[in-house]
Length: 155
Image (tube, rainbow, N blue to C red):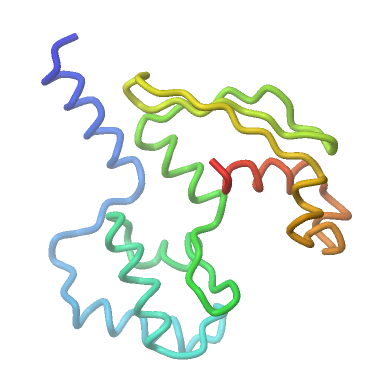
């Protein structure tokens, strides 16, 4: 495979997340953010917070409507969800090999789209305990899922 073809295949994988249309103006994005803020459906305090989230999604080439499914306000800061992190990584050609996803351990190897770099991560309930997460409802009900998403955040 030529370098040009490999680059083309990598670039085409990026468009699997809804691409940002070139005709979106800052004014249009501000209006969209204001409406999202007024809706009360999302955990944003005001239109400025909503605009910041819309612009973060814009920087990743996403449609503004995807912004609030991808970013959440956590402790006053916009944070990308672990699910969105994984989707973005995979959409750009990254690969994940899951070794274990149980309530005792999550372990996976993440590989760059071009195969040049792989790294293995592992998390356990002890890691979650250090972050004071185990007392939360989702951690009690879905420990294996929560460990898997914690691993993705770590990666």
